[in-house]
Image 1 (spheres, one colour):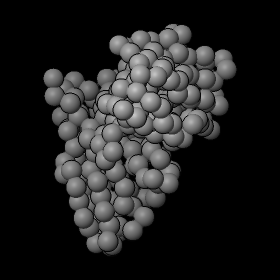
Image 2 (image 1 turned 90 degrees about the vertical axis):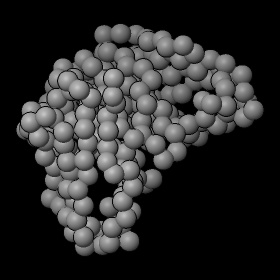
Image 3 (image 1 turned 60 degrees about the vertical axis):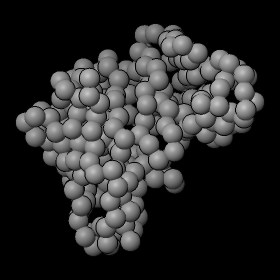
Image 4 (image 1 turned 180 degrees about the vertical axis):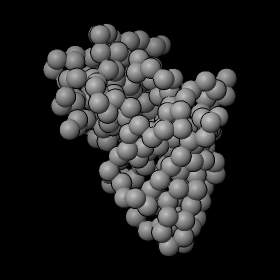
Length: 113
Length: 114
C-alpha cells in the first residue's frame, strides 16, 4: 500500500517568488492536511481539505493557500515568499472518520534565499 | 486553546535502558492521541494511536498510556536501542469543532548511547 507522497522533496526559491507543493494521499483517504515545521515554532497546522472543501484553516496569512482535486490529491501554494517561510512542509492523510490516525508524507524542504 | 507540552526536551540514555517520555495537554476533550517518531530531516512515522476511551496501546517494545482526565500520556520504550534515537512527538486530536487538525508538542529528542 503506497504511503503519502509529497513532491518535490527539496526546493530553493528566492524571496518574492511563489511556490506550489503537491501531496498525493493514501488511496481511499479523502482528508488531506498540511503542516509547517520550523525549529522555533514546531509543527503548526495550515489547513485541511475533505472532498475538495477546506474544513479548517490555521492561523497563517493569506499568502498560504491550498486546494484539493477530485482524486483527493492536494496542492498548497505560497505566494510572495519570505525568508521566514523556510521550513519543512508536511502533508498528512486520514480516512474520513475521527477515530483513525494520520499518516504523514516525507515532507518538502523549502528554503527561501 | 489546546496546548501540548512534552518534557524533557531532550534525553540521553545508555543502550538497554527502559525509558518514559511524557506528554501533557490542557483540554481533555479529545478524540485521540497519537505518538510519532521523526528522524532528522524526515517526515513523521506513526507509532501508536490511543482513542479517548482507551487507557493504553502496545506495539512491540512500545507502550503508550492515556489518562484523559488528568491530561497526560506517556510513551514507554523497553530495552532501548541506538536505532530508537529520534525525536518523539505527541499530538492530540481535539473533540468537537476543529477536530480536523492535530495539536503537537515540541517533541523529545532521544539519544540512545551504544
